[in-house]
Length: 234
Image (cartoon, rainbow, N blue to C red; front, side, top):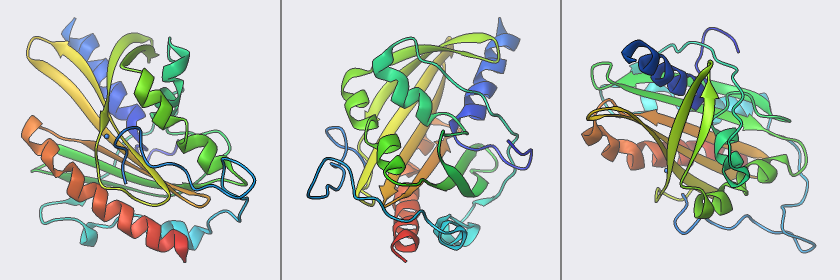
């Protein structure tokens, strides 16, 4: 992916993998809201993908965030992750910058807490029912998957998965906490909130610099979800 950005979780995970090398969650409560259904099945009726203008209008800007946040610039990473457990693959896919079938739209990176906290907000869109196909499996996965192993930049990593209860957004949303033990008292913990509205998907990735900073997730997720849904509805 282009060097101007770090989209989603993958690079943050790569940073933790590199740390290991050098050193040696409209959200979803109870699995998230159900996807909106049409009269004929479990998935929403086909609709037009979001426009570039809608995706740009739906992504966070510095002006939308609390005081102390500034624009950031994250490195690129196009890694694909394969979980060692099939029931965990929707979570592993959520951590990838590239998503099959998606048109990646607006993406913004931010830093806060004097540079300790990192935030990425990305909007994407899909043809047909692709958005539901991407988001809906996350709910069942969170009921079954508590952790999985992947290989990141050649480094094996074991990730722990926890379901988060975060503000509801759009037709369906889920909160996920992905963590990794870095040894001793060190832990890498990434918070991801994904929301779907029609054919659009919002993916918010928050990497708090301290455990105390994790409490800011709900506020950040609410801001991101509200702006995304408003833009997606047109």
